[in-house]
Length: 160
Image (cartoon, rainbow, N blue to C red; front, side, top):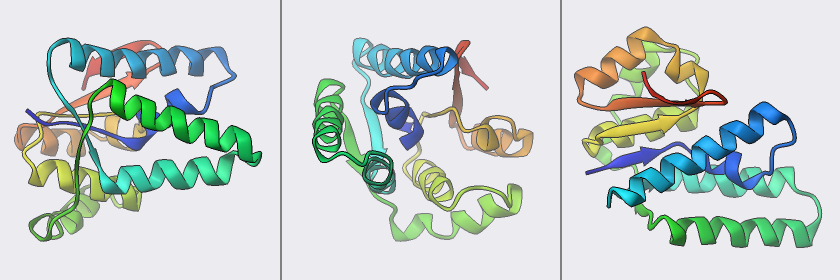
C-alpha cells in the first residue's frame, strides 16, 4: 500500500514551530507517521518532496550548525518511519495538466506529488495544504481515483 506524504508534513516536524497551533499540527504530523508504522504501512516520499524539504531547510535556516542538525533530523525521520521513495515517471506527466485544470492555483511541486501519487495508485495522500484539502473538485478527483486525502491540522488528522 502506498501512503504518500507531502513535504509540508516533514517540514512541520523539522522546523520546530513556535506558535501553539503549529506545535499541535507538528505533533499530529508525527502521529500520522507513527500510526502508519504501527500498522506496518510504509510512508512514501516522492523525490520532488525531498527536494522541497532540502531547499526549504537551506533557505530557512541560516546558521550552518543548526542546518546540519536539521538535515540529520530529516535523515533520522526517514529511517525511523522507514520511508520508501519514488519519483515522477513519464506516465504521470500527463496527469499534471488535469490537476491544474481542476485547481489552477496548485503549487508546481504539489501537482508533481499528486501526479506521482495518482500514477503509483496511492492509497492516501497526507497534507495540511489548504489548496488541496479544501478544494472539493480536487478531493473528489482523488477519491474517484481511490486516493484518500488526509488533512492534518492543529485539530487533528481527518480524512477529507
